[in-house]
Length: 123
Image 1 (cartoon, one colour):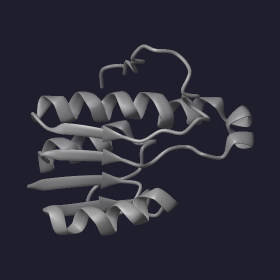
Image 2 (cartoon, one colour):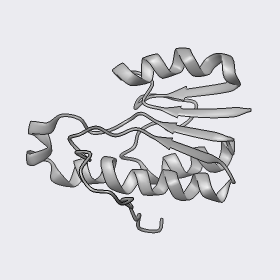
Image 3 (cartoon, rainbow, N blue to C red):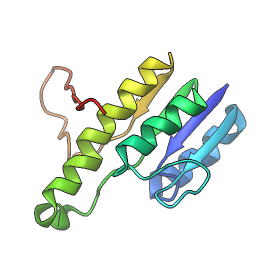
Image 4 (cartoon, rainbow, N blue to C red):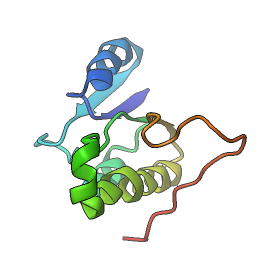
């Protein structure tokens, strides 16, 4: 079973990498990974990575998390936290994989009783 993890250097990503490694062939990426693209600001790169690897599962534990800076860099925050997530979802679906995406209450506060959707622009 092939597993692709985005965000391996974050607090959650480090824990997930340890837990996922025994479950299959894990490729864990971070922003500066060199073999494959783990930089969520590079939409073409992450799409290419998923297309190339065709993982059974994609786990996204990566995000723009500097809340104060997000107000200064709203385009970058939206690129990473919205557009990249849409690309990851689309490419995972296209390779018949399953996506596990983690978020925080900074993005979704837990209120509401309906699904929320992200829509990405086509690359």
